[in-house]
Each structure stands twice: as C-alpha cells, then as structure tokens.
Image (cartoon, rainbow, N blue to C red; front, side, top):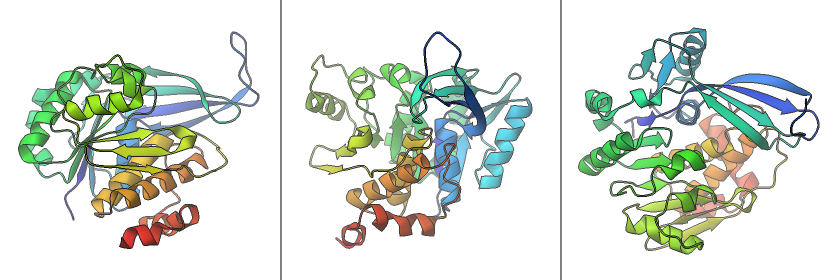
Length: 315
C-alpha cells in the first residue's frame, strides 16, 4: 500500500514543566522544562513517517519562528505539510505541568487557530483527500469540519478515524451523526461526554456510539489496557507494565501503532498489541515521539511485551 495516511488537526509547540517533587497547588514548584514538537495530529503524522508510512499533514502554523521550527521538524521526519495553512500570528502552544511521577497535573492550550481548517478549505484539498488510505482527525477541529469529513469518507469509502483528544473537545460531538466513522478512540472520561444517553454504564455508551453510526469504538483504560468494540465482537488487551518517564504523547503513540497495523493489514488483535507496544516505548522517553524506533525495530519489540504476537499474526 502506497496511498498516504492524511492527518488533520493540531500542531503545537509542547512546553513541558517537569516537577522535581509532587506538585503543590497555589505555590511555587521547582521544575525543569523541555520544548518539543507536539499536537495530536502532528505527533501521529511524525511517528507514522518514522515508521515508513507515507503521510500528509493538514494543520495550522503561525508565520513565526516556532512555526518554521515545527515545519522543519515535520519535513525532516518525512511528513508532507504542503496542504497545511500558514497564518499571520503565533503558532499554537501546549503548556503541560507534569507531576514528579510523569503524570499530567494540568495543561494549557493557546493560539491553535484550527478554526481555519473549514469544510471549504478541505474541499479545496479534495484531490489529496481522495488519495488517502486512511483519514485521521483530532477533535480540536470544529464540528462542521468533522461532519464534512464524515460525509466525504462515507462517499469515498475511505476509513475515517476520530481522536477525541480530551473531555472539552470531545463534548462537541455528543449529538453528531457518526455514519462514515470507522473508529473513535475515547478514554473512560471522554466516552460518556460523546454520548446522548444519561446512563452511567460503559456498555450503554458503546451502544449509543455504535447506533449513531460508528463502526468501532476503541476504549482506552490507561494502566488497565484497552478494548475494541464493534457490533459483532470485542477485543481486549492488558497494558504493559513500564516505568513512566513522561506520559506526553502515549495516547497518540497508541493510535499510531494501531494505524500502522491497519496499514499492514494486521488483525484487530495484532493491531492492539502493536499499539500498546509503541505507547509503552513512548512512556519511557521524554516527549511525544519514539524517534529511536524504525518499523522493523518496533515490530521486533512487540513479542517482548506480548509473547503471543507471532501466533496472533498467523491466526
């Protein structure tokens, strides 16, 4: 397969403050800071390119030094950015406060300007979109833009994946018709806010999304692993036990691993093992990208976490 994966959504500068002791609210905390390239869609595009998957990114950059820096990093990784927008102003920034154990304490998002990715703009990129093997969008986009992508994907039979990102953007899609959606990837907090049901039961939330048109729901449960649901079956998988250095980008890495598996036409069970492996590798490094891994190296590490991987591949 040589058609690209097209990632649509956020590109940010990630500025992360790593607390040297457990964070105390309403006072000064000692920390060290790191600056890395980030943004959900950009992270996934970058990691896919490092794993030898052709990828194009539709995002928004400022015409400042941060924007130039981000685009240079994307191009060096092999990500196409010609379809992205460069606007006058500052590039988006994600500022995260990480507790001593590497977990996220709080974060701030500024200057995203993703409202510039409109249905009309995507229509102008329709020739590129029609070439896609998969289309992925993050929930930072406006609802009308995602609705356009759902219609486009259904019309052209292109698998479309929606990453909810976090609770606030996920809420926007609670009443959206999801026909045309191949996969949505919420965690336990994002799942209920995407639903119209008032039930507190996970199964009712899953049924709500399936009944509204989603083909599959991949529910992330953190340290407890994940489960992939469709109308006909479900697949569950435990998460590896790893020492966390930095939680930033672990979810993005998980979805990247799953996409790589889909691109290689693996089964759902094999895709989940690949996804969890890449997520585990990202948890062990600073930043959102496992730039120490090629596709071959990643595939060789899956049996370390999941000894049954070869059996699952051959099943």
